[in-house]
Amino acid sequence: MFKKLLAAVGVGGADVETELHTPGVQPGGQVQGVVRLRGGEVPQRLDGVSVEFVTRVERETDDGETESKRAFGQQRVGEGVELQPGQVVELPFQAVVPLETPITFYAGRHLPGGEVAVRTRLEISGAVDATDTDPIGVGALPAQHVLLEAVERLGFHLHRVDCEAGHLRGTRQTLPFYQEIEFHGSPNYPRLKQLEVTFIAGHDGLDAVIEGDKKAGLLTSGRDLTNVLNIDYAAIDQVDWQAELHNHLTRMNTGWL
Image (cartoon, rainbow, N blue to C red; front, side, top):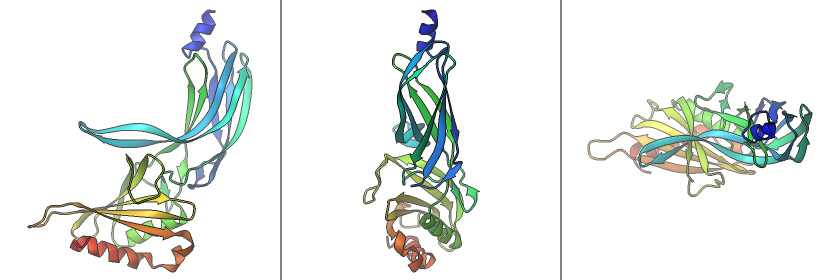
């Protein structure tokens, strides 16, 4: 009886270890792996076994900014698993990576601040859920790569990425947060202190939200300027994106947007 009570609070209960066969992936791709369960000191029934993606998300509050781990894209890989003491059970899985998953790699570089992991969760009635978390690299989609490369060619320098809680109106966003890719300003657009790019990817295209932090002038106050580009994957190679972005950024720089 004592061992059963201990298992209920997470002592001597089932262990979980997840092995990822896919160390890197792109949004919309698949992560393959195996969940390896090992029984504890007493028999246990696992109501469910699931994998989900997690990332760090910031939220603005009245007291400042708070940060927490947010789960998304949860997928079931097993349920009703009976584990005997010391028994090992393996559950192979394939998990689809949501298209809006934040990217952590671009052009062979890790994006500072980028963080995505696969978390495995065991659901055990009357007991503390067991979890295992494994980081994974998420590379930029071809269309994202083209846009980011164009931004850098225009003189902006990649700074960091983060995820913000909230919804961007006028986009195809479905997740409760979005990723901002921050760049230091470019000498070509001296009134833009900073540029932020957000991608909201879908199956046939993506929305690129361009936000410039404009320096205050003598007669005007600084303000954030936004613009949304709707990009069709099929037409990505038919547009000079460096020229297209230059047109938008020039209008931002001069205050037309």
